[in-house]
Image (cartoon, rainbow, N blue to C red; front, side, top):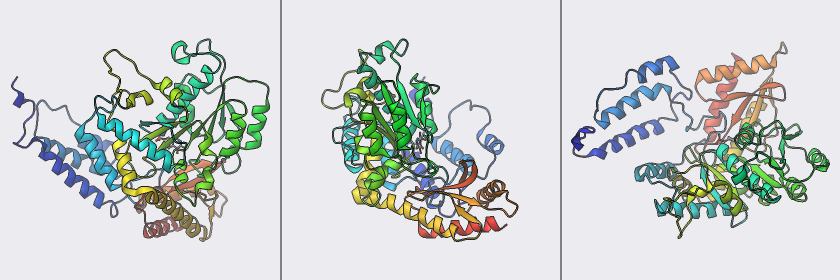
Length: 471
Ligand SMILES: *Cc1c(COP(=O)(O)O)cnc(C)c1O
């Protein structure tokens, strides 16, 4: 086969990247004006995107144009300023551009030898993050896909350490016949903590669940009771910084004190809440977080790194490495700098540190703080504006960027009315937000996590929500 027949190109095979950039600009610059939710149904998208596998090659620009056109109606304005569903940040310009370079450079960031630049960028960025988030210097960092894998990584390090303390090498021997590990979680932990425990072979049946208070915070008195019960040995406690519904924080300082008094390990799931540490105004919420043993957070929620970007930090780099290390005869150890693959579940992977580096560089310390504070101020403005309307109830203490809203119905069917309002808002398209069930009630859930949201975006969204509520 002649090389040139692999695919047809004009004399400039990479010129399609300019068209990709044009397409991206069209999308991004149109976000403020576009309908936020998707337009097409799955069936319409199957028709637009489907059909048989092509028999032969086509020009790259043709492929790109077709893809962009067919996908358009199924795209969601998640990176835009009026998307308030789940907890979804939007890409910062510098982070997105660096992410493009990560793809263009196509480095295998697993090994130092395969990309010294990717290795050193992660080393440097890990240090910046520890500084920014007020975590101890000297912690190790793993750049993973998201909060889910950050929880897996932190808890794998925990599993290693608490079992090593009783003479059990879990990486070699597994969990069959291992000493029991007491795993303690808060009632309102995120579902990915359970998933991590399942993947790590710890399961969920044996977890001890500590009751939470009305805001979803693990109750310190209940944790103390649990830890007072007879039983010693390996102990892992999962705490949370930023509840996915209310934004509330577990009492982290007391938790760390209680658990460390028993020689246990504290893992903090701070997927978005940990970023509060970057702000002087909000830092009190995460007081004590720095005493934990491992932390999970997401750079794709705050401060605006494109998907997928999670971070696992560990105060015990040796445990982190022992849990994640990969060894093979052909994998040459770095020597001069770390091999990233020893700190994440992945082996080969993209240079995920580059966009995080660019986000932090472009915002600086004050920019990250301002971004987080602005989102929280917008959340308070949502709560104040909606709460001032008749028949609307704000159901959480708005301590961070999350707002829970209930629409009261004259007939007492508040759940049905709230669900109906959410549906109408989603159809209306001015903004997008979702629902949740919180303490037995159906509620609207607003999350402000995008750097580009303005007060005007909030006002327009409030107007749309109240209009839908009146219908
Ligand atoms: C989003 C979230 C996760 C999971 O993170 P992913 O990036 O979706 O994997 C875990 N914990 C909390 C508290 C979250 O908000």
